[in-house]
Amino acid sequence: MTIAVKWCGIDFGQCLMNPGALRNHLVIGDIYKELGKPELIPEGIERYHNMKDKYGTYSTIKEGHKDEILTYVLEGDQEAMNIFLDKEQEHLKAAEGVEEALEYLKGEGITLCIVAEMKKTLGPIGTDVVSRFLKNKGLIHYFNKMVTPQGSVDLKDGSVDDRYKGRTKESGALYDLLVGDLQKEGIEPRDAVMVGDKIKTDIEPPAQRGFKTIQFTGYFDWGASRADYRISDFFQLMTIVKGKKDA
Amino acid sequence: MPSNEPKSVIVEFEDGSTRKVDYGKLSRVARTELWRLGNFPMPLEQRYVVLRWKNGWKEVMAVAGACSDPFKYYILQRIEEHGRLGIERPGTYPAVKIIWRLPAEVEQMTITDGEESRTYTLSKTEDVRVEGGKTETQYKLEKTDSNPVAEIIERLQQVLKEQGMDGADVLAKSHTEKLEIYERLRRGVDIKAHEKQEDVLAFIDLLLRKVAGARKKGAKGEDTI
Image (cartoon, rainbow over all chains, first blue to last red; front, side):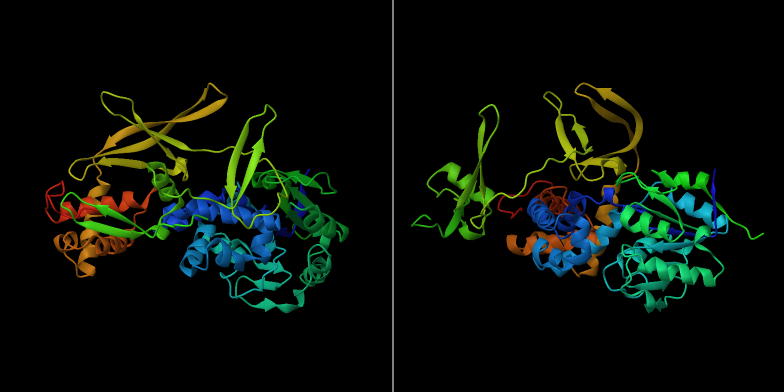
Protein backbone atom coordinates (compact mmCIF):
# COMPACT_ATOMS: atom_id res chain seq x y z
CA MET A 1 0.00 0.00 0.00
CA THR A 2 1.26 3.46 -0.83
CA ILE A 3 0.38 7.06 0.06
CA ALA A 4 -0.51 9.27 -2.90
CA VAL A 5 0.23 12.94 -2.16
CA LYS A 6 0.90 16.30 -3.79
CA TRP A 7 2.95 17.83 -0.96
CA CYS A 8 5.59 16.47 1.39
CA GLY A 9 6.96 18.27 4.45
CA ILE A 10 10.19 17.01 5.95
CA ASP A 11 11.58 17.77 9.39
CA PHE A 12 15.25 18.82 9.60
CA GLY A 13 17.09 17.89 12.82
CA GLN A 14 17.60 14.17 13.43
CA CYS A 15 15.58 13.45 10.31
CA LEU A 16 16.82 14.97 7.03
CA MET A 17 20.07 15.86 8.78
CA ASN A 18 22.15 13.13 10.36
CA PRO A 19 23.60 14.53 13.58
CA GLY A 20 25.56 11.37 14.36
CA ALA A 21 28.58 12.37 12.31
CA LEU A 22 28.96 15.65 14.22
CA ARG A 23 31.43 14.49 16.81
CA ASN A 24 33.20 16.73 19.30
CA HIS A 25 36.60 15.24 18.65
CA LEU A 26 36.16 16.13 14.98
CA VAL A 27 34.74 19.65 15.30
CA ILE A 28 36.75 20.84 18.30
CA GLY A 29 39.72 18.81 17.08
CA ASP A 30 39.71 20.44 13.66
CA ILE A 31 39.31 23.92 15.16
CA TYR A 32 42.41 23.71 17.32
CA LYS A 33 44.41 21.90 14.64
CA GLU A 34 43.62 24.73 12.21
CA LEU A 35 44.58 27.29 14.84
CA GLY A 36 47.86 25.48 15.46
CA LYS A 37 46.98 24.64 19.07
CA PRO A 38 46.15 20.93 19.07
CA GLU A 39 47.18 20.67 22.71
CA LEU A 40 44.00 22.61 23.58
CA ILE A 41 41.71 19.96 22.05
CA PRO A 42 41.06 17.95 25.26
CA GLU A 43 40.26 21.13 27.23
CA GLY A 44 37.93 22.40 24.51
CA ILE A 45 36.10 19.07 24.37
CA GLU A 46 35.84 19.05 28.15
CA ARG A 47 34.30 22.54 28.16
CA TYR A 48 31.79 21.48 25.48
CA HIS A 49 30.90 18.43 27.58
CA ASN A 50 30.45 20.76 30.57
CA MET A 51 28.00 22.84 28.54
CA LYS A 52 26.14 19.74 27.39
CA ASP A 53 25.76 18.60 30.99
CA LYS A 54 24.49 22.04 31.95
CA TYR A 55 21.86 22.28 29.20
CA GLY A 56 21.08 18.59 28.64
CA THR A 57 21.46 18.21 24.88
CA TYR A 58 23.56 19.65 22.09
CA SER A 59 20.34 20.64 20.29
CA THR A 60 19.40 22.83 23.27
CA ILE A 61 22.83 24.46 23.14
CA LYS A 62 22.56 25.12 19.41
CA GLU A 63 19.03 26.48 19.67
CA GLY A 64 19.41 28.77 22.66
CA HIS A 65 22.99 29.08 23.86
CA LYS A 66 25.18 29.16 20.77
CA ASP A 67 26.77 32.40 21.99
CA GLU A 68 28.26 30.46 24.91
CA ILE A 69 30.10 28.17 22.49
CA LEU A 70 32.10 31.28 21.65
CA THR A 71 32.39 32.75 25.13
CA TYR A 72 32.87 29.56 27.14
CA VAL A 73 33.95 26.63 24.95
CA LEU A 74 36.18 28.67 22.63
CA GLU A 75 37.14 31.23 25.27
CA GLY A 76 36.05 34.23 23.20
CA ASP A 77 38.21 33.36 20.19
CA GLN A 78 36.19 34.63 17.20
CA GLU A 79 38.50 32.91 14.68
CA ALA A 80 37.82 29.61 16.45
CA MET A 81 34.07 30.33 16.32
CA ASN A 82 34.21 30.99 12.58
CA ILE A 83 35.97 27.66 12.10
CA PHE A 84 33.36 26.03 14.39
CA LEU A 85 30.54 27.21 12.12
CA ASP A 86 32.32 25.87 9.03
CA LYS A 87 33.27 22.57 10.65
CA GLU A 88 29.79 22.04 12.04
CA GLN A 89 28.47 22.19 8.49
CA GLU A 90 31.30 20.12 7.08
CA HIS A 91 30.76 17.25 9.49
CA LEU A 92 26.95 17.25 9.42
CA LYS A 93 25.69 14.66 6.98
CA ALA A 94 22.40 14.15 5.15
CA ALA A 95 20.44 11.08 6.24
CA GLU A 96 21.00 7.91 4.29
CA GLY A 97 19.04 7.83 1.05
CA VAL A 98 17.94 11.50 1.24
CA GLU A 99 19.18 12.58 -2.15
CA GLU A 100 17.75 9.53 -3.91
CA ALA A 101 14.40 9.99 -2.13
CA LEU A 102 14.21 13.72 -2.92
CA GLU A 103 15.01 13.06 -6.57
CA TYR A 104 12.27 10.42 -6.67
CA LEU A 105 9.65 12.59 -4.91
CA LYS A 106 10.44 15.53 -7.17
CA GLY A 107 10.08 13.23 -10.17
CA GLU A 108 6.66 12.21 -8.88
CA GLY A 109 5.61 15.87 -9.06
CA ILE A 110 5.42 16.26 -5.27
CA THR A 111 6.08 19.71 -3.80
CA LEU A 112 8.78 19.47 -1.13
CA CYS A 113 9.11 21.70 1.93
CA ILE A 114 11.27 21.71 5.03
CA VAL A 115 9.14 22.08 8.16
CA ALA A 116 11.52 22.88 11.02
CA GLU A 117 11.00 24.05 14.58
CA MET A 118 13.69 26.72 14.19
CA LYS A 119 14.16 28.99 17.19
CA LYS A 120 16.78 31.41 15.90
CA THR A 121 15.78 34.48 13.90
CA LEU A 122 16.12 34.00 10.16
CA GLY A 123 18.60 35.88 8.02
CA PRO A 124 19.15 35.68 4.28
CA ILE A 125 19.12 32.17 2.76
CA GLY A 126 22.32 30.37 3.65
CA THR A 127 22.87 32.11 6.97
CA ASP A 128 20.68 29.89 9.17
CA VAL A 129 21.71 26.35 10.02
CA VAL A 130 19.01 24.70 7.89
CA SER A 131 19.34 26.56 4.59
CA ARG A 132 23.15 26.61 4.97
CA PHE A 133 23.08 22.84 5.30
CA LEU A 134 20.76 22.44 2.29
CA LYS A 135 23.01 24.71 0.22
CA ASN A 136 26.25 23.04 1.28
CA LYS A 137 24.92 19.57 0.57
CA GLY A 138 23.44 20.59 -2.78
CA LEU A 139 19.89 19.77 -1.67
CA ILE A 140 18.28 23.22 -1.60
CA HIS A 141 16.98 23.03 -5.18
CA TYR A 142 14.63 20.20 -4.25
CA PHE A 143 12.68 22.38 -1.81
CA ASN A 144 10.18 25.17 -2.44
CA LYS A 145 9.85 26.49 1.08
CA MET A 146 11.29 26.29 4.56
CA VAL A 147 8.41 26.63 7.00
CA THR A 148 9.47 27.60 10.53
CA PRO A 149 8.19 29.52 13.58
CA GLN A 150 10.55 32.31 12.48
CA GLY A 151 8.71 32.69 9.17
CA SER A 152 8.17 30.71 6.00
CA VAL A 153 11.01 31.24 3.55
CA ASP A 154 10.52 30.90 -0.19
CA LEU A 155 13.76 29.12 -1.09
CA LYS A 156 13.53 30.24 -4.71
CA ASP A 157 13.44 34.01 -4.13
CA GLY A 158 14.35 34.39 -0.45
CA SER A 159 11.14 36.18 0.53
CA VAL A 160 9.88 35.58 4.06
CA ASP A 161 6.24 35.14 5.00
CA ASP A 162 6.03 36.63 8.50
CA ARG A 163 2.56 35.24 9.21
CA TYR A 164 4.28 32.09 10.45
CA LYS A 165 6.28 33.97 13.09
CA GLY A 166 5.68 32.60 16.57
CA ARG A 167 3.64 29.65 15.29
CA THR A 168 5.26 26.44 16.45
CA LYS A 169 4.90 22.88 15.24
CA GLU A 170 4.25 21.61 18.76
CA SER A 171 1.32 23.97 19.38
CA GLY A 172 -0.11 23.08 15.96
CA ALA A 173 -0.48 26.75 15.03
CA LEU A 174 2.11 26.39 12.29
CA TYR A 175 0.15 23.52 10.72
CA ASP A 176 -3.14 25.47 11.02
CA LEU A 177 -1.74 28.20 8.80
CA LEU A 178 -0.06 25.67 6.51
CA VAL A 179 -3.38 23.88 5.92
CA GLY A 180 -4.96 27.13 4.72
CA ASP A 181 -2.02 27.99 2.47
CA LEU A 182 -1.94 24.53 0.93
CA GLN A 183 -5.69 24.66 0.28
CA LYS A 184 -5.21 27.90 -1.64
CA GLU A 185 -2.87 25.90 -3.90
CA GLY A 186 -5.49 23.17 -4.27
CA ILE A 187 -3.84 20.77 -1.85
CA GLU A 188 -6.05 19.29 0.87
CA PRO A 189 -4.38 17.95 4.07
CA ARG A 190 -5.20 14.39 2.94
CA ASP A 191 -3.01 15.07 -0.12
CA ALA A 192 -0.06 16.02 2.07
CA VAL A 193 2.38 13.99 4.13
CA MET A 194 4.66 15.08 6.96
CA VAL A 195 7.87 13.15 7.65
CA GLY A 196 9.62 13.62 10.98
CA ASP A 197 11.00 11.96 14.08
CA LYS A 198 9.24 13.70 16.98
CA ILE A 199 5.71 12.58 17.78
CA LYS A 200 4.74 15.82 19.53
CA THR A 201 5.88 18.08 16.69
CA ASP A 202 5.94 16.03 13.48
CA ILE A 203 3.27 13.36 13.93
CA GLU A 204 0.44 14.30 16.32
CA PRO A 205 -0.25 17.93 15.28
CA PRO A 206 -0.28 17.30 11.51
CA ALA A 207 -2.22 14.00 11.91
CA GLN A 208 -4.89 15.87 13.92
CA ARG A 209 -5.28 18.23 10.96
CA GLY A 210 -5.70 15.44 8.42
CA PHE A 211 -2.15 15.15 7.08
CA LYS A 212 -0.68 11.74 6.38
CA THR A 213 2.32 11.16 8.62
CA ILE A 214 5.52 9.11 8.47
CA GLN A 215 7.61 8.65 11.60
CA PHE A 216 11.35 8.59 10.92
CA THR A 217 13.21 6.43 13.43
CA GLY A 218 16.66 6.41 11.82
CA TYR A 219 18.40 8.31 14.64
CA PHE A 220 15.98 8.22 17.53
CA ASP A 221 12.82 6.22 18.01
CA TRP A 222 10.40 8.20 20.20
CA GLY A 223 8.08 5.19 20.45
CA ALA A 224 4.68 4.15 19.10
CA SER A 225 2.55 6.83 17.45
CA ARG A 226 -0.45 7.23 15.19
CA ALA A 227 1.81 7.72 12.18
CA ASP A 228 0.68 5.95 9.02
CA TYR A 229 4.16 4.53 8.48
CA ARG A 230 7.47 4.22 10.29
CA ILE A 231 10.71 4.35 8.31
CA SER A 232 14.34 4.07 9.40
CA ASP A 233 15.94 5.43 6.22
CA PHE A 234 14.87 7.65 3.36
CA PHE A 235 15.13 4.93 0.73
CA GLN A 236 11.90 3.54 2.21
CA LEU A 237 10.01 6.70 1.20
CA MET A 238 10.39 5.60 -2.41
CA THR A 239 8.28 2.52 -1.78
CA ILE A 240 5.66 4.25 0.40
CA VAL A 241 4.97 7.62 -1.26
CA LYS A 242 3.91 8.38 -4.80
CA GLY A 243 2.65 11.48 -6.57
CA LYS A 244 -1.12 12.14 -6.68
CA LYS A 245 -2.45 13.27 -10.00
CA ASP A 246 -5.71 15.21 -10.23
CA ALA A 247 -8.52 13.15 -11.75
CA MET B 1 49.59 27.00 48.22
CA PRO B 2 53.39 26.74 48.33
CA SER B 3 55.00 29.72 50.00
CA ASN B 4 57.85 29.86 47.52
CA GLU B 5 56.31 29.72 44.03
CA PRO B 6 58.82 29.27 41.18
CA LYS B 7 59.05 32.26 38.84
CA SER B 8 61.01 30.93 35.90
CA VAL B 9 62.82 27.95 34.43
CA ILE B 10 66.28 28.43 32.96
CA VAL B 11 67.63 26.00 30.38
CA GLU B 12 71.38 25.91 29.88
CA PHE B 13 72.87 24.77 26.55
CA GLU B 14 76.16 23.01 25.84
CA ASP B 15 77.79 26.27 24.74
CA GLY B 16 76.88 27.90 28.03
CA SER B 17 74.05 30.01 26.62
CA THR B 18 70.79 30.01 28.53
CA ARG B 19 67.10 30.58 27.90
CA LYS B 20 64.56 31.57 30.49
CA VAL B 21 60.84 30.88 30.41
CA ASP B 22 58.08 31.88 32.82
CA TYR B 23 57.15 29.03 35.11
CA GLY B 24 53.59 30.35 35.15
CA LYS B 25 53.29 29.76 31.41
CA LEU B 26 54.15 26.07 31.70
CA SER B 27 51.32 23.59 31.24
CA ARG B 28 50.22 21.39 34.09
CA VAL B 29 51.91 18.47 32.32
CA ALA B 30 55.23 20.34 32.19
CA ARG B 31 54.91 21.35 35.86
CA THR B 32 54.19 17.74 36.77
CA GLU B 33 57.29 16.62 34.87
CA LEU B 34 59.41 19.16 36.74
CA TRP B 35 57.86 18.01 40.00
CA ARG B 36 58.81 14.43 39.15
CA LEU B 37 62.40 15.55 38.52
CA GLY B 38 62.50 17.04 42.00
CA ASN B 39 62.67 20.29 43.93
CA PHE B 40 59.58 21.76 42.30
CA PRO B 41 56.22 22.26 44.00
CA MET B 42 53.54 19.69 43.42
CA PRO B 43 50.90 21.00 40.95
CA LEU B 44 48.12 21.13 43.54
CA GLU B 45 44.38 21.46 42.93
CA GLN B 46 41.98 22.61 45.61
CA ARG B 47 39.53 19.71 45.35
CA TYR B 48 39.67 16.02 44.58
CA VAL B 49 37.14 13.33 43.74
CA VAL B 50 37.73 9.87 45.19
CA LEU B 51 36.03 7.10 43.20
CA ARG B 52 35.40 3.70 44.75
CA TRP B 53 34.50 0.61 42.73
CA LYS B 54 32.48 -2.38 43.90
CA ASN B 55 35.61 -4.46 44.46
CA GLY B 56 37.20 -1.78 46.66
CA TRP B 57 39.44 -0.27 43.94
CA LYS B 58 39.86 3.44 44.60
CA GLU B 59 41.11 6.26 42.37
CA VAL B 60 41.62 9.96 42.95
CA MET B 61 41.20 12.75 40.43
CA ALA B 62 41.74 16.46 40.80
CA VAL B 63 38.95 18.87 39.85
CA ALA B 64 38.80 22.65 39.78
CA GLY B 65 38.55 24.38 43.15
CA ALA B 66 35.20 25.90 42.14
CA CYS B 67 33.55 22.46 41.91
CA SER B 68 30.94 21.74 44.61
CA ASP B 69 28.85 18.54 44.31
CA PRO B 70 28.37 15.82 41.70
CA PHE B 71 24.94 16.14 40.04
CA LYS B 72 24.80 13.41 37.45
CA TYR B 73 26.51 10.26 36.25
CA TYR B 74 25.80 8.43 33.03
CA ILE B 75 27.40 5.91 30.75
CA LEU B 76 27.64 6.41 27.00
CA GLN B 77 27.56 3.47 24.63
CA ARG B 78 28.53 4.01 21.04
CA ILE B 79 30.50 2.24 18.35
CA GLU B 80 33.77 4.12 18.00
CA GLU B 81 36.04 3.76 15.02
CA HIS B 82 39.72 4.50 15.06
CA GLY B 83 42.50 3.70 12.67
CA ARG B 84 45.64 1.90 13.74
CA LEU B 85 48.66 2.64 11.64
CA GLY B 86 51.45 0.11 12.04
CA ILE B 87 54.90 1.25 10.97
CA GLU B 88 57.76 -1.20 10.65
CA ARG B 89 60.86 -0.71 12.77
CA PRO B 90 63.39 -3.24 11.50
CA GLY B 91 64.97 -5.24 14.29
CA THR B 92 62.42 -4.35 16.93
CA TYR B 93 58.68 -4.00 17.55
CA PRO B 94 56.64 -1.91 15.11
CA ALA B 95 55.40 1.56 16.01
CA VAL B 96 51.62 1.92 16.20
CA LYS B 97 49.89 5.26 15.76
CA ILE B 98 46.18 5.82 16.41
CA ILE B 99 44.10 7.86 13.95
CA TRP B 100 40.89 9.20 15.49
CA ARG B 101 39.91 11.67 12.78
CA LEU B 102 37.60 10.04 10.19
CA PRO B 103 39.79 6.94 9.85
CA ALA B 104 37.78 5.53 6.92
CA GLU B 105 38.47 8.68 4.89
CA VAL B 106 42.26 8.46 4.97
CA GLU B 107 43.28 7.73 1.38
CA GLN B 108 47.04 8.03 1.29
CA MET B 109 50.09 8.16 3.55
CA THR B 110 53.69 9.14 2.94
CA ILE B 111 56.66 8.39 5.13
CA THR B 112 59.54 10.81 4.68
CA ASP B 113 62.73 12.02 6.30
CA GLY B 114 62.87 15.06 4.04
CA GLU B 115 65.18 13.33 1.59
CA GLU B 116 63.36 10.13 0.71
CA SER B 117 59.60 9.74 0.57
CA ARG B 118 57.50 6.63 0.10
CA THR B 119 53.78 7.01 -0.53
CA TYR B 120 51.08 4.39 -0.15
CA THR B 121 47.45 4.48 -1.20
CA LEU B 122 44.85 2.70 0.90
CA SER B 123 42.08 0.50 -0.44
CA LYS B 124 39.56 -1.27 1.74
CA THR B 125 39.64 -5.03 1.46
CA GLU B 126 37.48 -6.85 4.01
CA ASP B 127 35.86 -6.77 7.45
CA VAL B 128 37.28 -9.39 9.78
CA ARG B 129 35.80 -10.39 13.14
CA VAL B 130 38.61 -10.75 15.64
CA GLU B 131 38.97 -11.77 19.26
CA GLY B 132 37.21 -9.62 21.83
CA GLY B 133 34.14 -9.16 19.62
CA LYS B 134 35.89 -6.53 17.50
CA THR B 135 35.65 -5.97 13.77
CA GLU B 136 38.74 -4.94 11.85
CA THR B 137 38.25 -3.31 8.47
CA GLN B 138 41.41 -4.24 6.63
CA TYR B 139 43.13 -2.05 4.05
CA LYS B 140 45.66 -2.84 1.36
CA LEU B 141 48.64 -0.48 1.16
CA GLU B 142 49.94 0.00 -2.35
CA LYS B 143 53.03 1.98 -3.20
CA THR B 144 52.43 4.82 -5.61
CA ASP B 145 54.66 7.23 -7.48
CA SER B 146 52.74 10.28 -6.28
CA ASN B 147 54.71 12.45 -3.89
CA PRO B 148 52.61 14.76 -1.73
CA VAL B 149 55.72 15.95 0.10
CA ALA B 150 57.03 17.41 -3.16
CA GLU B 151 53.70 19.22 -3.54
CA ILE B 152 53.99 20.57 0.01
CA ILE B 153 57.54 21.77 -0.70
CA GLU B 154 56.34 23.47 -3.86
CA ARG B 155 53.58 25.19 -1.89
CA LEU B 156 56.06 26.14 0.84
CA GLN B 157 58.26 27.81 -1.77
CA GLN B 158 55.25 29.72 -3.10
CA VAL B 159 54.31 30.89 0.40
CA LEU B 160 57.89 31.99 1.12
CA LYS B 161 57.85 33.96 -2.15
CA GLU B 162 54.44 35.50 -1.41
CA GLN B 163 55.64 36.59 2.01
CA GLY B 164 58.94 37.90 0.64
CA MET B 165 61.03 35.45 2.62
CA ASP B 166 64.00 33.25 1.89
CA GLY B 167 64.34 29.77 3.42
CA ALA B 168 67.93 30.22 4.53
CA ASP B 169 67.14 33.59 6.12
CA VAL B 170 64.25 32.08 8.04
CA LEU B 171 66.49 29.27 9.32
CA ALA B 172 68.99 31.82 10.57
CA LYS B 173 66.42 33.65 12.71
CA SER B 174 66.04 33.32 16.46
CA HIS B 175 63.99 30.55 17.97
CA THR B 176 61.09 32.83 18.87
CA GLU B 177 61.02 34.47 15.46
CA LYS B 178 61.17 31.09 13.77
CA LEU B 179 58.21 29.75 15.75
CA GLU B 180 56.09 32.69 14.66
CA ILE B 181 57.19 32.38 11.00
CA TYR B 182 56.80 28.60 10.94
CA GLU B 183 53.22 28.97 12.15
CA ARG B 184 52.53 31.45 9.34
CA LEU B 185 54.11 29.08 6.84
CA ARG B 186 52.09 26.17 8.21
CA ARG B 187 48.87 28.09 7.69
CA GLY B 188 49.97 29.13 4.21
CA VAL B 189 50.84 25.57 3.24
CA ASP B 190 47.63 24.36 4.93
CA ILE B 191 48.89 21.45 6.96
CA LYS B 192 47.95 20.64 10.52
CA ALA B 193 49.49 18.71 13.37
CA HIS B 194 47.96 15.30 14.01
CA GLU B 195 48.31 15.72 17.77
CA LYS B 196 51.32 17.83 18.67
CA GLN B 197 52.04 21.21 17.17
CA GLU B 198 55.78 20.67 17.51
CA ASP B 199 55.48 17.81 14.98
CA VAL B 200 54.20 20.04 12.20
CA LEU B 201 56.55 22.91 13.05
CA ALA B 202 59.53 20.55 13.06
CA PHE B 203 58.30 19.22 9.71
CA ILE B 204 58.27 22.77 8.34
CA ASP B 205 61.82 23.17 9.69
CA LEU B 206 62.86 19.97 7.90
CA LEU B 207 61.37 21.11 4.62
CA LEU B 208 62.90 24.57 4.94
CA ARG B 209 66.29 22.94 5.24
CA LYS B 210 65.59 21.06 2.06
CA VAL B 211 64.37 24.22 0.34
CA ALA B 212 67.38 26.17 1.55
CA GLY B 213 69.70 23.41 0.41
CA ALA B 214 71.03 23.18 3.91
CA ARG B 215 72.35 19.91 5.22
CA LYS B 216 69.79 17.58 6.78
CA LYS B 217 71.05 17.73 10.34
CA GLY B 218 71.44 21.04 12.10
CA ALA B 219 75.07 22.15 12.06
CA LYS B 220 76.83 22.91 15.35
CA GLY B 221 75.51 26.08 16.84
CA GLU B 222 72.60 26.20 14.39
CA ASP B 223 69.40 27.06 16.17
CA THR B 224 67.05 24.16 15.41
CA ILE B 225 63.55 24.10 16.84
